[in-house]
Image (cartoon, helix red, strand yellow):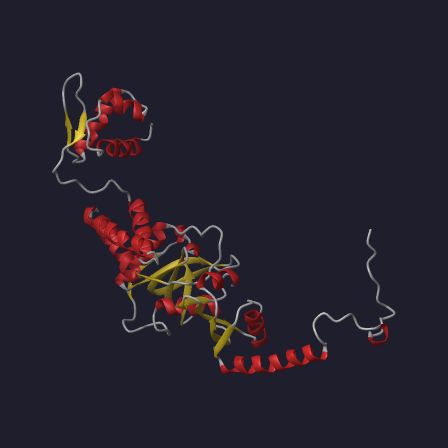
Length: 355
């Protein structure tokens, strides 16, 4: 193993088992010479790890017990990655995992150096979770830890930032914004910020922020009392992602399980919240009432629309027309209409020939 940092971490793992390991055994496990093992032991001691050595034919190495350990050997991105994972798990829906993650996150913060601990704390304080958002399957987009930390720091300090951003279609743009909060939702990260050039609140996908061109903290302070037009940052992201500032915003009860509803709904089409074991609440939106009505009807589950009233009225009208059409069409399973009742064929109509 030629990678020295990786080899040191593996050596430390082997020594933490509690029993003595000979230099020959360690050399075989690491794929290096006993001399390299001795040098690595000296490196660990130089970093503050108390490694005891027993001299003799059956001697070996082990970590001294009862000694305070130095900070973890983590670089910035490793610390952020662990903190992000634990933070997400701590806010999850699996109780045992969530509780364990909270404890692990607390331990991680205790042993991190002050420089990294401040960054992880900024990430925690700047992030709020959003549950039930349907963003689709497949691979999650890659979010750069350095970008995430820079935005979290800007949110924590309430400091304006500049960054390059790519829209959904890839169109690049320059942004100057006042960051408010980071929102984590279904393996994606969103920044809620006030766009100073557009004089409006915006939701930005963090994975679309260009690391090479930001984000750069400007040193200018954000307006203290400026808040997004929603109950909180998570609600703003839910509204932005699911309805895209749609003309009609719908609140619907679906009489099926949360898992079944999530499987039936397409990605990005709504925010689901559990009500009972057999029902859930859907927040969605659209610019056309007919589109909303047909999308709900095609889910194939019983539902109730609570708002908007325009959608409820449209469903009544649509239902009457469909019922009338069903009654005019006769009972289910009737034969095709007789030739006399069929509409005349167009003389110009042609049909493809099968081969």
